[in-house]
Length: 151
Image (cartoon, helix red, strand yellow):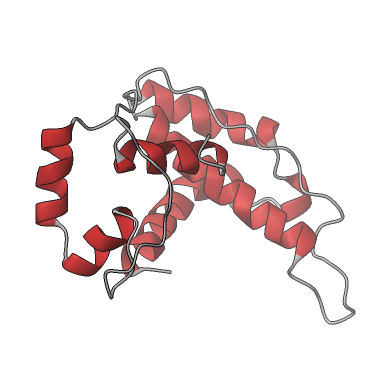
């Protein structure tokens, strides 16, 4: 985990503490998080920031139910509650880079990163045998990140 991620997580936990800090893990759920969500929305905090905090709680609860164990080998929670993120209508829609934007991006990237996106390895050998046609490589990568298959 990067330092920025650790600092962000610590900030989110400090913000959550007044709302759920006195609760045991088995008492944390969407209902107990509702006052936090409402207060942050009233304060004008962006949905992305609120969702980042909720995502951190969800991660902790999932780890508590699946990975983290006590001295007897039992998970800390029997089940993790469902923590739903808020819909974010303010998020910008992704868009494919045009060829000029893609060219500028590749020029700004270090060689080893630009080559990986372009479908070649560090020696310049081709690793992707797709015919991109008129679709940019960055567009295909964005699609792959969305559905995991690049379709």
